[in-house]
Amino acid sequence: MITSANMLAVELAYWQETVLRGVVGLVAVLLPTGALVYLFLFKMMSFMQSRLGPMEAGPYGQLQLLAEFGKFLQKEDIFPSKADRFVFAAAPFVVLVSTFLLVLVLPGGPDAHFIDVNTGIYFALAVSSVSVIGILMAGWGSNSKYSLLGGLRAAGQLIAYELPLVLSVVGVVIMAGTLNMKGIVASQVDFGIWFIVPQFIGFMIFLVSIQAELTQPPFDMPVAESELVTGYLTEYSGIRFLLFFIGEFATAAVFSAIGATLFLGGWHIPFVDLDAEVMNWIGPLVLAAKMVLIAFLIFWFRITYPRFREDQLQRLAWKFLIPLALLNIAVTALFKVVI
Amino acid sequence: MPQLPGMLVGLGVTAKTFFKTVFPNGPAGPPAPSKGAHTVQYPHVKEAPPTRARGVIALHEDNCTACMLCARECPDWCIYIEGHKELAPPRRPGGKPRQKNKLDRFDIDFALCMYCGICVEVCPFDALFWSPEFEFSEMKLADLLHDKDRLADWMETVPEFPAYESGSEQKVRKVPSS
Image (cartoon, rainbow over all chains, first blue to last red; front, side, top):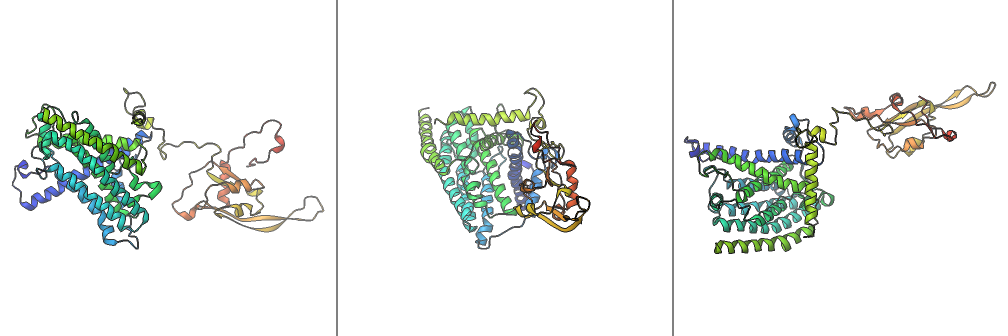
């Protein structure tokens, strides 16, 4: 997640910089996604179930993802006969675009960023809800009752959990006094300790909310296979299914990175100046390490817990998480004013 | 939240399984997941199936009378039997030659078979047996149709029937006389 041109100390033409940004953006999304899927979904999940997981493709199955990629590319791209073809075909791209837009505002160092907007976290939260539209498109365009129900469940769930997600972030924003992602990182350094300590309740709400936003178990009612086949994914095959898959886990990676920025001090490591030139290069790695830490929690919960019921899910969001988040905001604001 | 302790216990269970799998030699030992896991890496390591496992169906041809009971009871209709009548020498000297059913074809299509074992159960003449062999996959689907020679070859792998309890010898019937 680099590429301010001044970092590289060479003058790049506009098109060169654009190509570079595109490539780095793809790498910044796909590399952590692949790493998370291999590390956690393939290996950690297997170990937690006392098995080994993929072992054949490459040493310890490290090339398994490439094999899966090749498998999905070979498969036929099936359209249901009465599907709304354009909506059906476009849906995975809408989901994927929302994920790629999320990466834009992630800072990996003092100059290592795609764009530096003053409303960074606001932008991220707004863009993340675009994926609901893609999922609804998939559910509606498939012209299948399972897909439609899955899409509606997903929409209800994502909207319900957007609120506690935003409200838990508000606590951080109040403490930082800025919406800018870099500003939030800098204010954590000024505060003396990462926001996970003063905002621990906010962090827990954030974790639960992103778990639901990602439709990961225990919040995977939209794809509940025992009830809805695979929800809005039912009619998808081949490359479009792969895009949904990448979208789901890339969003997991990006949300983990956002959580690392908000609560774990972003690219900051103790005893190193936040704005040092070297942080442009090791900053993204530090951020990636913290991202893996938060993703570990997400996947641990995913592997451990069984699925909620739909009404339990909504009750948890509206009756427990949102009041708790509001209380968190009130207490945070009070401390901000008093201290 | 009265559920909270239970939720933490669940996390503990997965974490404990994780460490048991990755560190079977204790936390100080080197990580060895292939030793800690309960599963076996099949093509490289082979577990012997239980002796009476239901792997493949073997045919003891001499016992078969082409009565077609198995073919008719088969839920998948994957047994194909053809036969003709033959004259066999009389039992007693001077008697009339007997009529006997001779098996021309006895095929089981293991691509269709669902290994329910009804044919083995229903056979009144002890001609069908379960064998624990399970590695008979083929590159072509059609090759899964085993003819009667191939089915007879499986008889070598049928385990010996365990000895009966004392006093129950009268009931001994199902012994593969291979």
